[in-house]
Amino acid sequence: MSETVVFTPGERRVFRRKERITTSQWAERHRVVTNGPMTGRWRNEVTPYLRGPMDTICEPFVRRIILMFAPQTGKTQVAFNFISHMIDQDPGPMMYVMPDEKVTKRIARRRIIPMFRGTPRIAELLGPGVSDTTTLAVQFQNGCDFMMAWATSAAEISSESIKYLIRDELDKFPDFSGKEADPLALTEIRTNAYPYTKKIIDMSTPADESGYIGRVVETEADELRRYHVRCPLCQATQVMHFGQFAWPKACHDPREIVRKRLAEYQCEACGMLWDDHKRDLAVRSGFWQAENPVDRPQVVAFHLPSWYSPFVSLSSVVAAYLRGLEDPSKLMIYVTQHKAEVWKETVLPKKESGVLERKTSLPGGVVPSAAIALTAGIDVQKEGFWFVVRAWAEDLTSWLVQYGYLMSFPDVETLLYQTRYPIEGGGATMGIWRAGMDTGGGLTDDNEWTRTEEIYQWIRRQQPGRVYGTKGATHRQLQRIRVTMIDKLPRSKKPIPGGLELRLLDTDQFKGLLHWRLERKEGETQRFFLHGDTGIDYAKQLLAEELCRDRRGKVYWKKIRKDNHMIDCECIAAACADSEWLPSLKMLAAWLKDKKTPGGQAHAKRRTISGGVD
Ligand SMILES: [Zn+2]
Image (cartoon, rainbow, N blue to C red; front, side, top):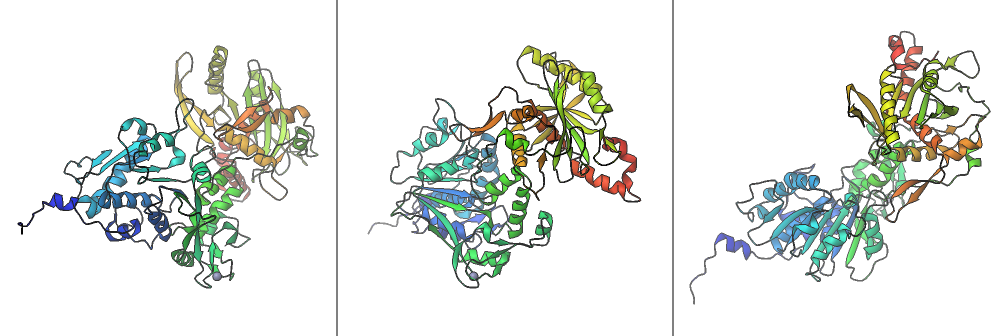
């Protein structure tokens, strides 16, 4: 017999016995979670729905899984457990791709490298060279190469082939236009050397229709699986739908729902109500099932709304839903972040005659008695100014009071400081509380730039707190309104002493909001009315833009008529009353109530906050 072969520790690791186990089993044995709500040893029972995707990716015939999951469901752990499992058991070149450089570096530093270090089974494969925590490439001692990249760099980073490809936050991957291939095709091509052994994990919370995840689920998945839970009381299995949520019908306040944990889930079969704990039990004995199962699927998609997650309370789901009823941008949050569905922007087509049905019997120039403040939106032209004046109730129901055209700055000043509109049914009058003027900054036309400087200088001369400069944002913003400071004039670059505050408006969001308000019905908040003298010219301008979709499904507003000034004016007037413009109209309403109460503290502040409600 030959002498005993002595392996070095490194060789022992290389020849480490392969365990014939799935990723979820490997994770339960070896994975240590280093951050998030569940630090310590990995336990599959905490997020039972992650077991299905982890084991599916290990099936020999499965090449790719797609996770369209709500946030806070732990979906990233599917990828983390899988890469750890492969580093340990089936090493091969792997790439983890994120949307941009910043998030890639952050996730490497804060999550992936700490995970490698915190999981002993992986840590012992790390070479001594991995002291630099910002590293975007790790070579393990068993020869496994791990690389991180972002969507635009992934194509160049390496000419090598990749066996394991993870694409995280797919819907934040940038747009690719023109001649370039999209980043999905560019990264996927790297896996071609492993046609029968490659594994791809795509995951994302969905966003709008221009994102990738909804399309890959629809066009590339062989199967779409949904999670079925088991009622802890009657044992019936079911997919959880929002329609089964229950909460006291009288309660519309999202904060109260969350604070008092008022939401429950009603079993479809026995009608019993589950609280969060029973929901967790139902999820724990659940399973994934395809809608239309196929034999040996290669690409399997999984869809998971937030309400399956132990980290999301049933009440927070209902709160998000209720917030969405009052605000289309919050409805988008509910749809994407809770239902985990793609947001489809829709606007019902309207006719001028339909718009004019919003006319009331009040003549122009009269303020309805329910109104608490007036706002004005002013759109600057080469010569004069288009404007609207709109009256607002506390629930953001609003009425057009006046619209028209002004010739000069003095005319605008008269509108802002001298004009008092009679209030319906009594001798009181109301002046404009807040006005916004579009500064048109950013246009390349020379004349327009001159006008912008003129407007800036005019605004700086105005009394503080009445009229503000606004500007349409060039990119979609998270918020509808963002405050920015300008310290130089745009063309002459002359400094502006003390700076000038500008409000950047996401006008696309305001246009959507305007159409949404036009569709509000009796009994709902935020209804949109016109005065009795409103003409067809106003209605034509209001409908001068249409919601369109580009090839990728991205929506944009297209001008279908030249004159669209009323849309711009109405968006600015709406911005002035928006909850994101502080102090907001709702704060004004609270202040007015306080003023009416004897001993209210607000009286002294009257001049600064109120536009002169007498
Ligand atoms: Zn039941």
